[in-house]
Image (cartoon, rainbow, N blue to C red; front, side, top):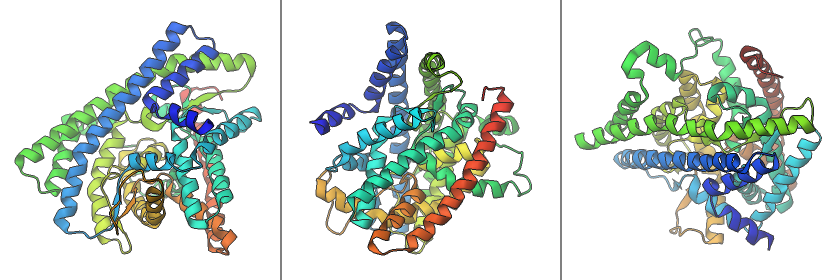
Length: 454
């Protein structure tokens, strides 16, 4: 019964489900019905609008990357389908519905004990924890281990949301919002690399974001012009004809122009809810600051995300060709949003650093996607969500939190006598300790810089 109810609600999709949830929250925190309804509906429009543009972008870049692959004659058997098919496969897992109350319970306990200040309303992305559980089952064969690792992921997401909330506010200008999303966990591995870049001349204290690019190179720094140029370059790599080159250029220009416009709707929707939630919590929990955890699209209005992702397309394709042991045929996840969501936080929106981090981290995504392809394929076959030809594997190049998932899955396999995963886990937890201190310091610096309350 519970499974049926949960699946029915989540089946509405995030563009419907999240506004409904935000309306309920708005009424609970004493917003007037008219104001709460207007804010919730605007949030739905923002999510759907952003998803429409993202799908438009994918449909433009995807065929170009596929053409590039065909031109190289690649023989790779793990087809990258992107996140959408994997979400439908994950929700079809027989134990999927149990992750829904698990996330809610952990969040409530952590809020009650003051271990987090983030109320995560992004229930749609419970599917990420489901996928993690499926992967752990595939590696270890243990259902209890799968739920333990999924629970750990929930905790990590909430703590990471606490560590990055002010930095995200500085980037987006949207108050009272955090990102308790698995994609953001990749920041744990990107942050040390970003710190090393501080010691490279020309990179430290020289944030090259889209605004500075625009300032330095004039019209060529405008979103639509950058999109046009980069889109044409991708089409040239794909050996399009003149019409195809110009068309992809205009399509990319259109997307980069519309992203910031739709992003403003998030601010319009979330500002009144955030203000009301803040006042509600202050009355009941004096001295504590709370914020609402949302899905990643509220970050999507930042042009640095899309410029870096488009530039990285030929890098991903080239590495798919040259990396020994890679089995992924990049396609659905060719625009690796999961990397960019973490990178823009770690770099503060520095375009040059985002591209450098993208180049360095691309092998991680390809190899982990290759490693997990057999178990993702087995799950898809068992639930019957999609038809898979014999001998074909499916995977996802953007596999959110690839480092976290691979390391914890290997560590959980200690129950089968595999102790090497524990070695990786110890190293990873050491990085987590450093990351906690590093990001806490950065949060404090942003609070001081912007004159925010602690």
